[in-house]
Image (cartoon, rainbow, N blue to C red; front, top):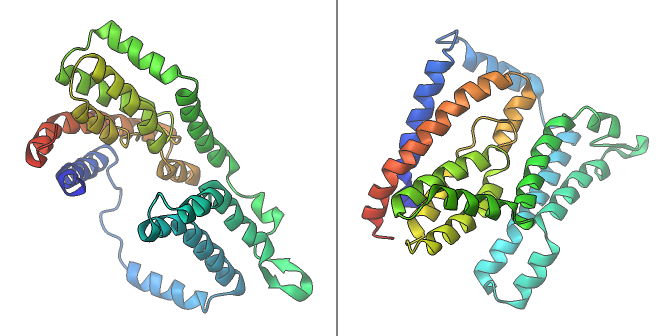
Amino acid sequence: MDGAALPICLLMFLVLAVVLLLLNRPEIRRIDGVAEYVANERAAMGALSRAEKNTLVAFGTTVALWITPGVVALIAGTESQVYGMISDRLDEGIVAVLGASLLFLLPTDWSKREYTLRWRDAGQIDWGTIILFGTGIIFGALLRTTGLAETMGTSASDALGLSTGVTITIFAVLLAVVVSETTSNTASASVVVPIVIAVAAGAGVDPIVPALAATFAASFGFMLPVSTPQNAVVYGSGAVSITTMIRSGISFDVLGAVLILVGMPVMVAVVGIG
C-alpha cells in the first residue's frame, strides 16, 4: 500500500514546490559562502557541552521508550501479556512528560545544583503555539467522543443525497480536508474515516476507496498552525505570517484534493483493491 501511494506523494511534492515558489517567490536565488559559514559555526561550537549531552540522553531515552512497545509487539505479538503490560505502562503522553522531566533532573554542575533546564528557561518556551496545537488535538477528540462529527457527517450526507461511490469519495475528501484544518492529521483520520465508512455502508457502496481517500486527505491540512506540528513550529518561529500560511495552504488543499480524486482510481486499479 505504501508503494502504491508513492506516485501520489511524489506528484504532491512537485505541486507543493511549484505553488510555494509561485506564491512566495524567493528574494535571493543563491546564497554564496553557506558551506564556509556552516563550517566556521561548527568549529566555534566546539565539543558537546554537558547540557547538550544531557539533552541527547533525554531525547534518546524518550525515543527508546516510545518504540519499545512496537519492538515487543514484533517479537512477542500484540496479543501477548508482555505487550499488554508494557504498552499500558509506556503511554506516549507519559513517556513525553518523563523525557521533559529528565531535563530538570540531569545536572550540568552538581556542586552548584545547576540542571539542564531551569524553570526560567522553560518560561521562554513559546507556550502559546504548544497550547494552540494541543487545543486542536482536544477538539478532534471531542468531535469523535461526543458524536458531533458523526452527526455532522451523516447530516451532510443525507442533505446531499450521496448514493454513489464517486460522490461519497468526493464528500470524504472534502470533509477530511476541512476537519484536518482544525485538528491534527491523526485525529482527523480517526474522526472522518468511521463517518465515511458508515455513509458508504448505508448507501450500499464499497467503503474501501472512500476511506482511503479520506485517509489521504486527512494529511492535507496546510492552512492553519493547528493543522500539524510542522505548521505550528513554522508559525511559532514568527518567520511566516498567518496570511501567508492561509494563502499558500488553501492552494495546497484544493490541488491536493483534486490530485487525490484523480489519482485514487489509478492507484486502486494498480493495486487491485476496492
